[in-house]
Length: 145
Image 1 (tube, rainbow, N blue to C red):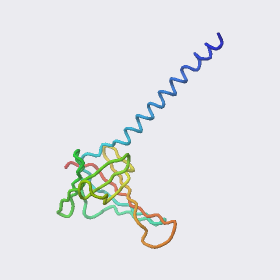
Image 2 (image 1 turned 90 degrees about the vertical axis):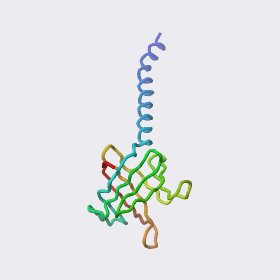
Image 3 (image 1 turned 45 degrees about the vertical axis):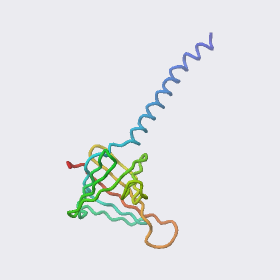
Image 4 (image 1 turned 135 degrees about the horizontal axis):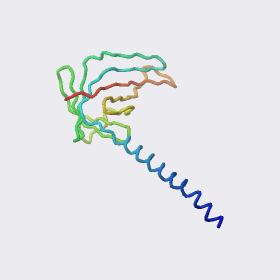
């Protein structure tokens, strides 16, 4: 009798644990498949190099990146348009000049919601040495194409 009673007491906790795991898995799945499609205009660029920072709040030109459902990205700026091909793998964004060519640009999606996109690109150090960190954050706002 006591054995059955203990099982009944633990049963709700077991179901809560299963439910929590399911909710966590669903939330991870949504983050790995972001809604990138649409037009994004660059707002600002943040540069970090070994503790030194610079924030450009008026980048020129104000590029617009248009991500389309067919995995193409059109970059508009300085009166030019250039077509790229993109691929998503979790929060990684890979840009190629041609389909099936080598990756020309790899970035991490730091933030993506209905109004803002933040991309991080690791850069090579300018000087020789160990323990150097250099990256760039690009902030975009959603715009109408």
